[in-house]
Length: 388
Image 1 (tube, rainbow, N blue to C red):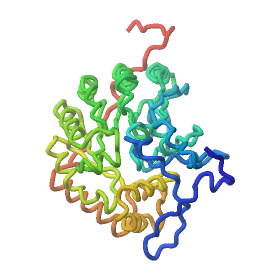
Image 2 (cartoon, rainbow, N blue to C red; image 1 turned 180 degrees about the vertical axis):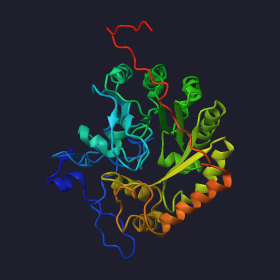
Image 3 (tube, one colour; image 1 turned 135 degrees about the vertical axis):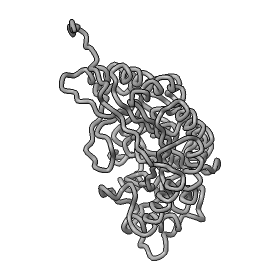
Image 4 (cartoon, rainbow, N blue to C red; image 1 turned 180 degrees about the horizontal axis):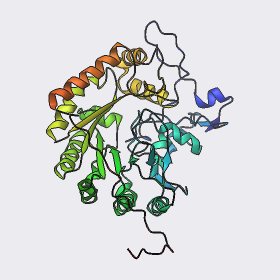
């Protein structure tokens, strides 16, 4: 292991990027050095470049002693997040909620396109392989949530869960933080909207069904592809497409409002599957659908490029040409009102295809609405009980 000499070399070791789409000037930095396949087996990212806030980084290279062969594979480790607040606020006009909860930091699903990857840089870790192998859990979330809901000035509105990292990623099986959150929300009569790509959500059907009867819960499951090879390569530790569709069916059969999310839509990779995904979800009983165009903020851009070159090199130029056509000539445009859907003819075509398929299948005819009418502020220790 050797420290590099400059910040540019540190974060982007000198492996040249492939040729760019025709007619576009190359403004990409060099690709990161890929980690040996055996060390990253079952992971999504190809590399582990340092986060953008680090002053220096270390890069593995063969010094002639075959020392790289001695490096261990990436194993999942779980640390403790000691945050004392659990409800995060936002004022984005692009999304239909103003508060959310993230029980975990990092996500073992390893989805290479995940827009949450750059948040690991705040921890001094890599948005690459560190993001999917160095996880942090918030064990006190249920107790802290109950305390925040009990605060005198708290005004209830739907809480979104799963909008950053997946609350039902593999470690939830043993940690059960999400189940604890749902127990608190059910007890307080508080509405919740869940986004996941894990079939583990069906474990909590008992709670979710009771909440749904009072218009307190809805669940969205992301189905990115029906192609098992593409899904496993792009989302290595997420539930398989058939398991996600079965989860949608079980949730729908239990009376829980369900949404299928075709997200992200990646041009020339999975955009041809939009209609088939919607058709399969409709047959599973889903009544609502949405989609989000691929987003490539900060480090996600280079991680996605590395993955694309490693797995679909023949599509690299075409994919990025289309991405730029939908992002005003750039790889990503974070402008409100455009970042989720893009602009231009290709973005319009994707949107129209989605709308036509939804109309044909009877999706989005009615939108489920959650209520705050049942909210009852949790009792705090020391609170005097009412006589009436």
